[in-house]
Length: 222
Ligand code: DX5
Ligand code: ZN
View 1 (cartoon, helix red, strand yellow):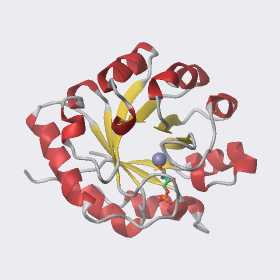
View 2: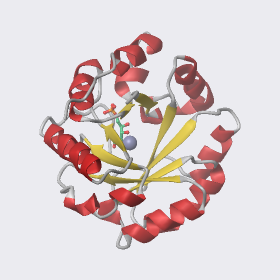
View 3: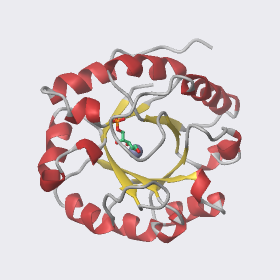
View 4: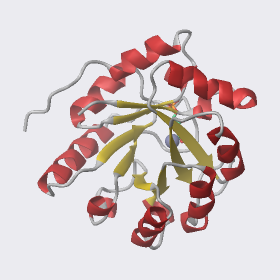
C-alpha cells in the first residue's frame, strides 16, 4: 500500500499557516494533519474550526483533523462545515464512539478513531469495520517533538493483522516521533498514513524530509 504523508501543522509557524501548508503540499504531502487540542483532554489549546475554515480557501489538500478534545460529538459538525475531509476522535474521550462515527459519516467526512499509547486495541476492535482509519498514537498526545514509543510497533502490527482477518479496508495512521528512521519501523509494522510534525517543519529541506519519511514501498508478507 502506498504511503501517505501527513505533515502536522502543530510544528508550523502559526502566523503563516496558509504558506506553511502550501510549502508541504508543493513538496508532495498528500494530507494536512490538523491537531485540535482543547486544554482538557490534553493540556494545550491549539486551534478550532474557524481557523480550518480560513485555511480551506488556500488548499485542496486532504484536511486530516485530529481531535484531541473531550466530548468530540460536540465538534463534528463545525469541523465538517469548515472543510475537514477526515475527522479522527479519541476513543478515550467518547462515551458513544460508534455514534460519533455515524455523525462524522452523516456530515460527509471520513471517520478515524485514535487511541493513546496506554490504550488497548480492544477499545477500537468493534469499530474497525465502520471507520476509514485507526490512529495509533506513538507518543502521548499534547506536544510535538516527543520521542517515538517503540513498544507501539507490536500494537500497529496486531492492528494490521486484525484488519486483514476481518477482510475489511482501513488505513493505519501513526502520529508522534515519526522521522526517517522510525518511519521504516512503522511502515514495516503495517502503518500507511504517517504524521510528522517536527521532522518535516523542522527540516531545512522539506521535500527531502518528506521523501525520506515516505521511503521505498514495503511489501508485506503474511
Ligand atoms: C501530538 C500530535 C502530533 C504532533 C506530532 O499530540 O497529535 O500530531 O504534531 O509531532 P511530532 O511529529 O513532532 O512528534
Ligand atoms: Zn496529531
